[in-house]
Length: 240
Image: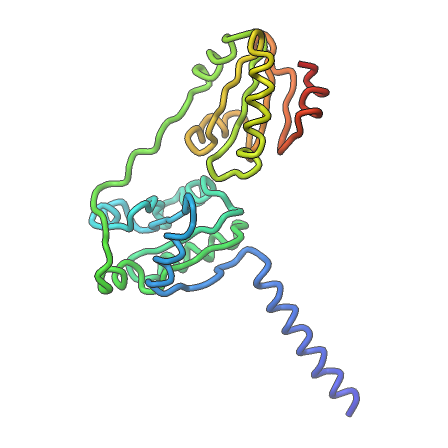
C-alpha cells in the first residue's frame, strides 16, 4: 500500500514539475482571444506584433503596427532572429494555424514569451475591429560600415553607444555618458547607434546585445564593453 502511494505521489510531483518547467522555459504562453490580444498589444510598449502571412495577404489588410514576416519563406528564421527573444512577441495569421506554427518555432528558437491570436485576422474583422491596408514598409538599410567609419574622424576619441528604445539599462546609462562626454568635449565625440535601426551594421560588427560601448582612438578600437557600466569603471578602464 505504501509502495503504491509512493508511486502515485511521485507521479504527481513529476507532473507538477513538468508543468512548472513549461511556464518558465520559452513557450507559447497563451492562445489569446481577439479581445485579449487587442488589449495586450495596446498595453505593451514598442510591441513586437508579427503578421506571419504572405506579403500579398498583409497588403490586403493587417493590424496597425504589425511587421510582416512570412513563416512559409525559406528565410523565416533569419526574420525571426531580428526580434528580441527576451521580450513578448504577438503573432497572428488568417485563422490561427500558421501563427500557431510560428509560435512553436519561436519557442524552439529560444523566445521567452509568444502569444498567438485565436481565429486570426478573420475573427478580428468579424468583431468589427480596424485593419489597415498597404504593403509592408521597406526595411531601413541603416548605417553602412563606410558611414560608420566616417564617424570615427570627428575627434581624437569617439565613444560609441549601441542602444535601443526598449532597453532600460541603455536609458539609465545615457545621462552618465552624456555627462562624461560634456566634461571631455574638447577631445571626445559621442555617437549613439540604435540597434533596431541599424541591424545590418550590428550584424557586421558581431554585436548581439545592448547596451554595448566602444571607444576609438584615432580611428582604432581601443576599448569595448558589453552590458551596463558605472561611471567610475568606465573612466578607470578607458583612462579618458
